[in-house]
Image: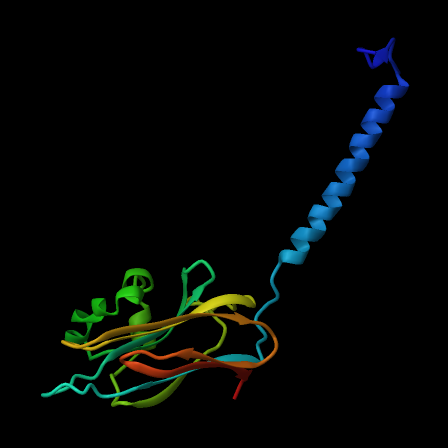
Length: 196
C-alpha cells in the first residue's frame, strides 16, 4: 500500500508504523536521558581537600646553588589547567624573568596574570613541603569529582628542570598515592583527606 491515508482515513498500516516509531522514540529517549543523567559527575565533597606533598633538595653542583622555582597545579582529564595551587618564585621583576623555565605550566596555565599575586610565595630552602587544593578552580568555583592530573614542576636557574605529572581519580573516599620522583623532586605524593 503506497498511500497510508485514503479519503481522510488512516489505514491500519499507517497507524501501526507510527505507533511503533513513537514507542521506539520514547524508549530511546528515556534511555538516553537516563544515560545522560548517569554521566553527570558528583560535586567535590567540600569536607575533603587534596594535600600534595614533595621534597626539594640542593643540587650537588659546585658554586652557589639557586633555589628552584616550583609550581603545583591541577589539570582536568583532557590536560586543561584547572587550578594553580602554589607558585614559588623570586620577587618581581627578577622573578618573572625566569617563569618560562616552568615550561608546561607557563605555556598553558600562566595566561591569567591575576594568579601571580594570589598563588606566589618566595622560593624556600630545600626541604619537604605540603600544599593543599580545596577542590576549586582558578575562579573560585567548586569542581566535580573525577579524573585530574596533579602536576609538580621545578626549574632551577642554570640548573635542572623536572616535572612530575600523574593522573588521579577524586571521589568521596579518602586515599593516598605516591606520584614518584625525579632529579629535582622526590617523595611526590597526594592524599585526599578530611579538611584540617
